Length: 202
Length: 100
Image 1 (tube, rainbow over the protein chains, first blue to last red):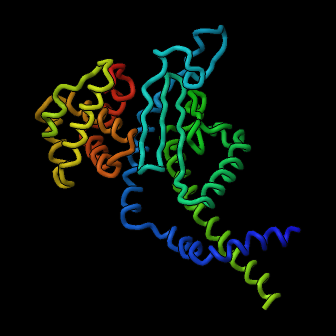
Image 2 (image 1 turned 135 degrees about the vertical axis):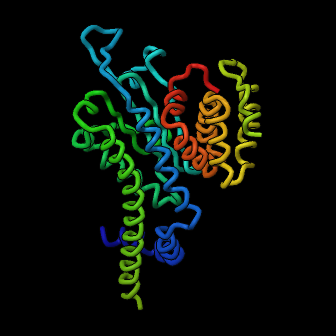
Image 3 (image 1 turned 120 degrees about the vertical axis):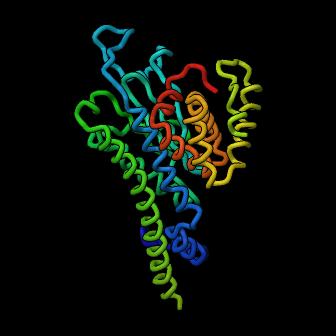
């Protein structure tokens, strides 16, 4: 059943695998325009994040002895700053919501076609299930976004701010590369499987 | 032209239509500047006119990026503005209650 299901997807992948493989081979090679906007995009995010991660301890004003991230609670308007968006194009954006004791960073990863959408969804679900190891990752992304980070003052007390910003930026770069790599691997595997399957009829 | 467009932003206005029209005007002015002029314009804004204009410029940049139009150009302007004026305008864009 597993072979039939994989060959089922392989045979449907076979007819589309040629253009898909062509597209997969073309996808990781960024066109000049895309490569040109990546560095300014990441630089802009870096400066915005450095400015946004000025957080300090601020116990809850509503409940005694509680300390909640204000960007999640959204109880008092004076504690939340204006959210800023940095976008590279229609599909890729990064929403940074600062507040007095926490910053929420939500990113939307570039998803060109359905395979990338599925890959992004599964990959981000994998990461979010292990959010405790990740420390700053949020278990659920915000609406319309793929991944969310929640950085609180406690994290900034333990970790260097510039290192945290570096981490987020390299995370964004690596996730794009990984999803591209996974897509190529999928297409290669599908092509091989379909080839082997068709062989038996040849 | 960019300087003129940035002069009187409708900060704190509740009328969304006014803000939208103003944003359009500013973004048009920003996008019509060629790449080589960006640095000069931003330097001129920062040194000669008041630094308030730099703040307003950065606020409009973020507003334009939120609408996801002209992203490439706006990212260049952002890099140039932060080079010139530092992180101050970014922080003020975040904290100022009177948004553009």
